[in-house]
Image (cartoon, rainbow, N blue to C red; front, side):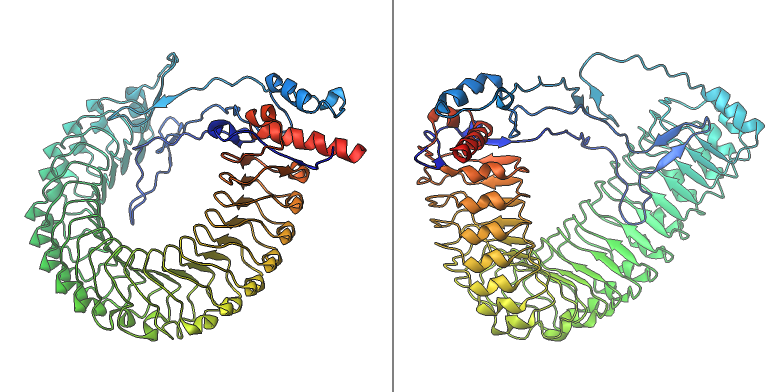
Length: 627
């Protein structure tokens, strides 16, 4: 072996040259399955019905484990073994080193979720599912025991028998995830009922007899087919919690004001375009969720709901907010993201308990002067996807208690000197996708920041003072115009993720080898002709992306990266070979070598894909060692 390196064939092997090396398992996540995780709504939890069966509100599905066709393991397909043997004709190896064929693919059961179904069904042959549940017997048993709780969720019920009226002691009735299209009038006899849960059915209305349920406290009608709030609901004046999420409701009647005992009202994910002024009569409301509707405005009367702590207005069509919002002194959560707001009322400064301020994806150009400074309990500020061309007015004090600040995707041209001088708690800063051309001179004072995202800006240099950001664990500066990385970066001993993608770098500093905690290094799409030998010191590295460069070689020291799982060196047009030591990366699962000539590796080996290449390198190294 005159040459210690091994290389690949021509360029066009895209599908064969990026391969996953280990078996994988597809976890099926059904799209559209109900989730009730908004503020105040009950999560999907397990219920036990009256027969003692465990019933989860969220169905779970398992998919068979599939053996990948592309495996970068020590095994190589039998059909390619001859290619290795031919390429390695000058090498000798024992029979137990001969690649073995992959096991056949296991069969899959594909699960399909049809419209208006709560769970997906297999496309294969139907299973015989005997449903021996007898609702009449369950009712009789509950009656005999004078039961106060009756749960027949997920029982495939299409109706309830009239005998339900005999459960006179009942306080809780759970009918989740059945196939009910209506409820019997006999429910009106359950005058002791306090909780009625009928989410995930197909109800289009409710019987008027429910008005007799004078003690009802909680009514859960989530995920049904209601096109309006049933009129009888407005007569249930004892209600404290009303869930109407994910229906087809278009209108909220003024009669909503009669439900003055309500503390939680969820109208999330409907088709509502306005709220009545009567909403202001719900003076006991603690939580109101009207997100994911078509609201264009909020009534002025909302200011009368002075007990409100959580107000979710996100994902609507709001263009302005009423100044009366400032009267909500107890408010600690205000969801405004994804609307069409171009300004905010100055009165919001009165909501001093707000902890999370998020106006992502609006049209805001400027905040009222001193607004953030007035919100003294702020911990998170998200101003992303607006039209800011600078930082909000308010000076350094506005970020005093803030732990996370995101101004992603705006038009900010500079970060003011000293703006974070009082930011004692700031650990996450996202300024990506702006127009920053430089960083402030006081960057050395940002020593508490753990995650810094400056990607997609106009930066031409990283200051040497980056070394003082000793808490930094994640540094993202991809898609800028950087020509060099300062050697002082080696002082960032806690750095785990370094993204330098799409810059103009032609080399990396040797000091990068000091980043002993680094697990992810991305230098793709630069002008690198080599990687530093010190890269072998990155013993924690799991992911290395160096594709789309001008690499002439991969350093032998890459073989010291024993935790490396993913390696991307694709689209390096001058890369002729790979080091034998690459085969020592025992944890390697994915390797991409598309569009690399690798002419010093036999063509038939390269054509077989990365798994065969690794096998070739391993055998070549063994032969070299024996020689």
